Length: 72
Image (cartoon, rainbow, N blue to C red; front, side, top):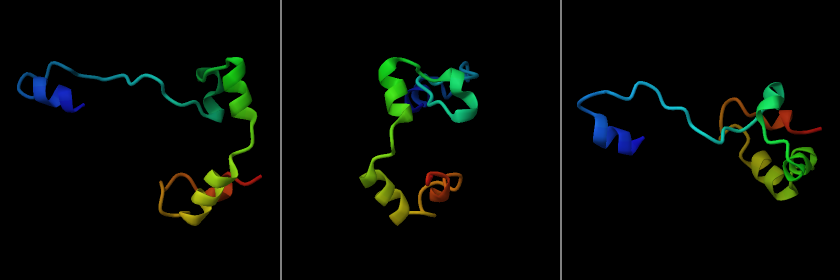
């Protein structure tokens, strides 16, 4: 985006940017990678060290990601 700003800040020729490699979500399950490796990762438990980080920082990460949603 910085490059676009540098090169196109006068002409405004870029009207939209479509980022690649967007993450999938459960409600958009068909949009994610379904390779065997991706399916294994998708179905795996969340690593304990990541869960501990999320719990320790609950409320300080992003507003739409309450840790309570990750607990099963």
